[in-house]
View 1 (tube, rainbow, N blue to C red):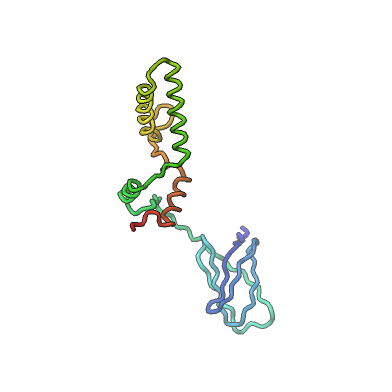
View 2: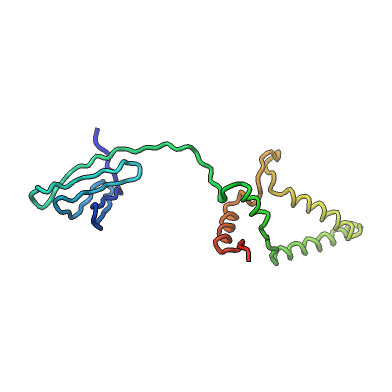
Length: 180
């Protein structure tokens, strides 16, 4: 069986500030002195050391270094942005979600459209708008909790949106939640 080449292995001279990476075919070249020690590391392999004999003669030295696989199986880990779920709940409840001008404009347009439809139906616009507003409020409260054909899959709305998470982390970095 032919040995496997190890690309991108880090080759460092122990005690000196010199290093290189092995090429795609596993080969590397490095200027050394007799008595130097090389340390060869690569993710997924056990580190290896190679001592350059101080009795070598000549201007080049070719050696093949065998690296052994280093496999470690870890248990699955669930990562949370906070140490405990209670912290997440506290932070979510403390969030101040701003209403944008576009949100206000869309709400006002929807109200005017409801009033126009109620007038066309011959109903009292304020009464009809109240009924629709209560229905929309109930729908908004339930929005994002369930999805799918039968509503059996619970989703926590914006919490399942990776872009919302990115916005949350950016606001934390900016310090938007720091107490003043």
